[in-house]
Structures are given as structure tokens and as C-alpha cells.
Length: 143
Image 1 (spheres, one colour):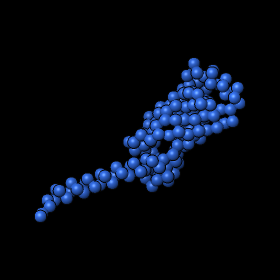
Image 2: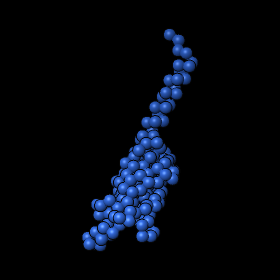
Image 3: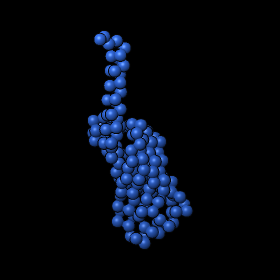
Image 4: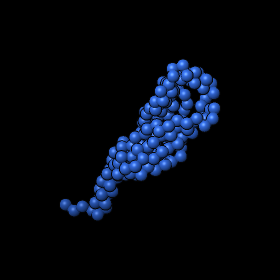
């Protein structure tokens, strides 16, 4: 039985594609997001500094992020960032995300934080990493 050269090439390309896409999935699952800080830049603007930690041996491209910022368990603001960044392999990078807070919820959330004596921020959402949606859920406690 004789195998054509084109068949061998197609099998090789298929194996390379399977290897490439399998490694994308493994690499994307090795990224962690941690809230570094939350800074108020004005009355209705804050910057959420997320630290992306890439523990793989492959550079990861974070194309976009979306999610919700919670203050003491209550919805505080929505985030959406479409500025792509590349996190080098075995490194971490700060990703500042500017968030506009709803004026309607601002008063109630700040009053809640003052009354409870704590400002516990958490961020839940999804990041598009190497073309795959990766969920994240991270906290920052400022009690």
C-alpha cells in the first residue's frame, strides 16, 4: 500500500494543529488574576489594578476583559476593557482597568461600606486569553 505525499502532509498538518490548540487550552488555564488595588480617581471613576500571573512557559495574550466589581457583596460597577496585553511566560503583569461607577448606586454602596466598617472588593468576570474565555473571581479585602 502506497501513501501519497499529500496525505502525509495533511496528517502532519492535522497533528500540528491538534498540538497547537491543545497547548492553547493548557496555557490559558495557567493564568491567574488577582486584585492588586482599587483606587478612586474621582467621584465616579476608579481604577481596578488586576495582576495577571502567567505560570506557563508560553506567552499569553489577554485580548479583552469584562466583569462586575462588587463592594461588600453588592454590585458596584461593571468593567469592560478591550486593550490587548501580552503577559510573558513565567511572569506577572499589572493590568489597570478604568471603571465608571453608576451614580445611582454610589451613595448606597459607600454608606454600606461606612456602616459596616469595611470595603471588601471582589471582581468576577471573564478574560479572553489566547482566544479562549477564562473566568476569574478574585477578592481584595480592606477591612
